[in-house]
Image (tube, rainbow, N blue to C red; front, side, top):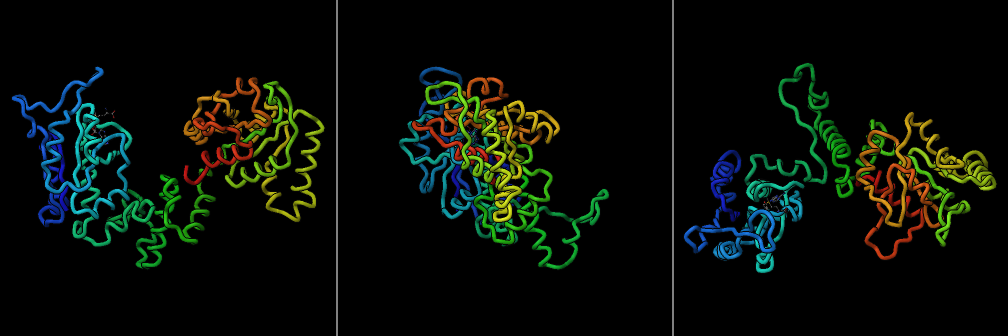
Length: 428
Ligand SMILES: C[S@@+](CC[C@H](N)C(=O)[O-])C[C@H]1O[C@@H](n2cnc3c(N)ncnc32)[C@H](O)[C@@H]1O
């Protein structure tokens, strides 16, 4: 395979392409590199490859002409990849795709980047490494070259090495140990010393699942998982120290809320809301749901409904429903809901209000961070949404779901389900 790297600093690659596995891969003819310098395609005395940006501003921009001529000089460029923070992430799927090509070209940007018109003239695929800005594309090109070359047949000594690694089957890799058997008091896990290959394979699979669950649960959504894997994951989650929903409480508020005229009012309970939000909370492992209404007849109705399903005839005919509604409490106002959380969690929760009306700037990743260490009470409004006095006393108001949509009228049950999935879902 040939990898052509277009760079203003070809010397950057001297050592990394010469040593260790890459050096051997080149010697064995598994991978071959060509370095093309756009400066060699300049026509002025100073060999100028950059100029000031139109419109002003800091930094310089790589000139289009030398780069275009450099690209046109490559006999078989193959797929043309532009290193760019704006690009598709370099991941194992992309590495695998590129390893199937016979030639690829990687362009290293410098300064503020290239003249944008090159992207119209050449089929450049933007590729990024990480989520941070580098001085230039050279380090990114090296990452790409290594990730791709090592997947070529014959590059790695052991034929299985590439198959077993992190990401190869959608999971992170299991941990490794080598001699001595005990290092500074820490022994090698016993299963690895057993000599029992089936047991070692089971141990490794479980460790791969546990690592992925702990560090990159988002990968699990696409991983190739069998029934046994799912059982292991369930057990790991059950036994693990950080059940994700343990700090999340919900409050479904029926007063004070707004009516369709924008007036502050109280609305009636809805049987469906209580059942469905209770079930969603239970499914995602949230710690509890407070149904807030100051109206005594509504509280009595809620008491009757919960009693039927958690202790009465309903609990016997449908124990699942009893489990879902077990953690639902009827409370008169938000202060009582905050006190209810405090009594269970030991500290006052952060109160997070929700609104579909563009009144909030709090983001879900921030709430996920809070949830790691402290209780959070997520407050949902019925009617036409929470009244201003609730939003004002919250620690934060979440950005609406679908803020860019034209139509934004989710039922509160649907909003609760989406929020819980984004906060506690396996893909989070
Ligand atoms: C200093 S950066 C320019 C950053 C650019 N002004 C921006 O804010 O997106 C110079 C060059 O480094 C490369 N580069 C920087 N960070 C990168 C990353 N994370 N992944 C891939 N290439 C990167 C790109 O080729 C980029 O054109």
